[in-house]
Image (cartoon, rainbow over all chains, first blue to last red; front, side):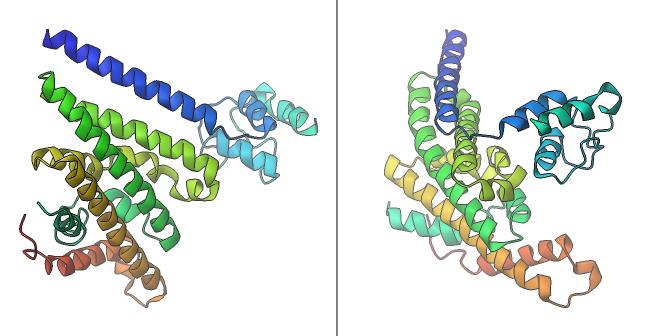
Length: 91
Length: 191
């Protein structure tokens, strides 16, 4: 009985907090530059740090600010990532 | 028991950082600047008070159902959800503070001061009002220690200190001295 009760209590609590967080995330959604998501999709997403930025997201933000070169992503260089980024940035 | 005594004792006599040695990670991590220290303190106070109230209520339910052994994992669940909420909220309201706090904001989840507070509330058999004041005291105590320490560290940046003591090693020694200063309060309030 204790077994089932534990599962029920923890499951219910998880559900309550999960829904609460989902609503909060929707309510306080931050509008981000649409180019950011596009560049993130074009990047390999391995967060290797070879570009010198902490993770792909930081690199994508730096590109939008114009601080990082479009061909700064080393793993994606041969897969045509710089061309894709150039295309996104010129839209 | 007098709630005011509980409040003051959590700030000064049983300061969570300097007397109980809980929550040292953000204490050393976010104390380089007073601005971020203030932001961090406010986030911690918010999480501490809400987490204490919710965990106190949930503990009652758990004990009623005979599931007292689940309290640790339930408390962690509550704290983690609250911290996530603070993170979402700060990202929207104050992106600057969000960037400045960086990794230490999600790390409030594993800040032992908050879990320690929730467990102490239960251990000391506090009522709801006492729990709220204990949480407020713990939060303000954490803030007091953090802001004092940040102020000292800001001054130390300009001081001419020997090279081996620059940076974190000097900060650790300062934290020890600050903690010794707070020992002066011990025994003032007996609970």
